[in-house]
Image 1 (spheres, one colour):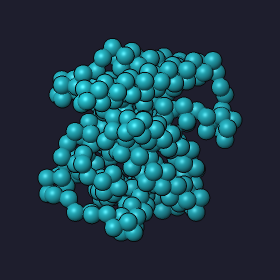
Image 2: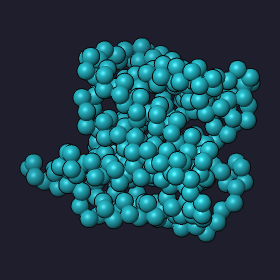
Image 3: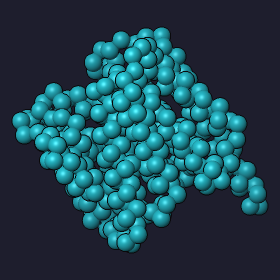
Length: 300
């Protein structure tokens, strides 16, 4: 049951993250830029999470070492990760950037094997290969004609840093904290970090309107409050490798939103990529449930 819960929560989280491009487009069209959009997202998420923590009387206290871990995750796995990904869009196509960003399931799998001695199995490797093919057809098909190496490395680094985020949440000294508390501190530290970066780079936006502001509130509630909390809760029940592969479900949500709301074109390679990703999700789900049944039998 816990494995199934972890799978459902992780898929729900990745579907929530799929709404981010929609909110970003609205925000950018109404006075925000990537820096201020990310800053306001973290700020509103921190406030909302603090209110919920107080309402449900969740213990917010964490140890000093856990604060250090949370700050490092926020700095590298959140702030610098997002900014490097957004900056890569300036130098290479978004399709290529997102394809390179989705290197993180590979990094998570390799780290789990070599650092944490996790047994992967051929089915997870197969699911990973299929998911990468799916990502290529879904967001990267036809985008490799011209490659700017600076943009290439920025996108690749963003993927490695996101892998760091997943691995640390799953295996570090914060893994037993409440998902609400983890997300609150990550959002809070990210607010401080982005505030400094935004001011120093002179990228603070002041000419936004209510539509742009509402989109930042929406992304905070959807992606941070619901998405990040659900993802971190899911990591308590399934492996980091499985969660990272399931995360490739995210671009399917973005694709559907683009088609329904922005009337974007649906090509054959989008359909093929979706099939690949859905197949990898099914393989991971069946594998995780099999591992759970095997574990239960060994205990009896």
